[in-house]
Length: 457
Image (cartoon, rainbow, N blue to C red; front, side):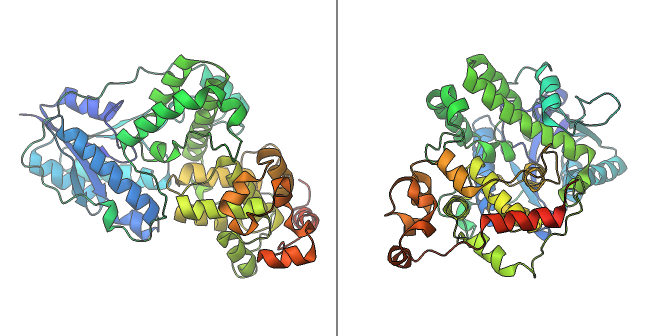
């Protein structure tokens, strides 16, 4: 009886899972394995919102496997050690897993090859599991990755995607595969009140409902803050509960402007993966050095605290930051705006903002979080690095009636219409009754400081 192990990482699903399909084809029995890595906790990445969502994902994956005669084996400890122990106990000759792009993923793969190789076990790593197009599959002439999105999107769009794989009908797990009790959401403290349910089942339901209702008008509505018509699929993509290959194929089949716009957003995700695959240091270092002299945690302590708590005095910024704390998620337009305010108006180091987002976002991952922050900060792949988003103008454009602001900033609930974006223009008596802070800094003053500090490159 031959045995293979499938190591689940950021691919917690059964549909369209090439490592699982390969393992089932190569062996009589398969061990679906997830290892709770202490290195993730030590790095401060195992935060409550993601821990709760992860617990849901593991429970859903286990339930799906059990309906097929299998089960999920969960272990805790250094990944290479635990995988080797499971392989040895079950007599496995192969371990299958999805390829990753972060420095942590590279170190994990190296240690697995070393540990498994010492025991005569082969490690097989599969591409196009976490992304639609594998990093490195599309490269410019004379370079290892694209540093500008538009030419990457043109080449990416010409790629032929593999056919999505169906979920297996049966999974036989050897009785010698031993694990521990699955974690539960109820055992996680400090979870934001409105974190959605995790897991492949919830993700597929979410996609089906959103595609029917909102995909056709996605192009015109994805920046509508009050309308909240974005897919909200990013947490499911982050944990791999949904396949990006399957999403691209299914959305393209539907067609229309909304489909094209949504596929473009999925391409942005792949774009960031190929950047970080080529430049792993960009998770902590500037992708492009602009000569910034960022204000740090000590110098800007009060401004940073006000930004984190949603009391900057700019309603659009504060609404976004409060949504983040409440839901563990933030509308993409609000992410751009709040990040621009911190880095360009307050001139605070982008790494401080990126870390705060990672502390709360359910979809917070090193690839997209860090590279999006660098894009906004002007140290990343944006071809207009001096771009500054004005929170008042952005509010008028993307929340013209102020509905989004009033939803998240109740102090301003009685201000009608677009006037909510400039509460400092109200009468003195009315401003005093709001109990809402005055702006931390004038937008003109912030812009002047940013330009003087950075200069023009």
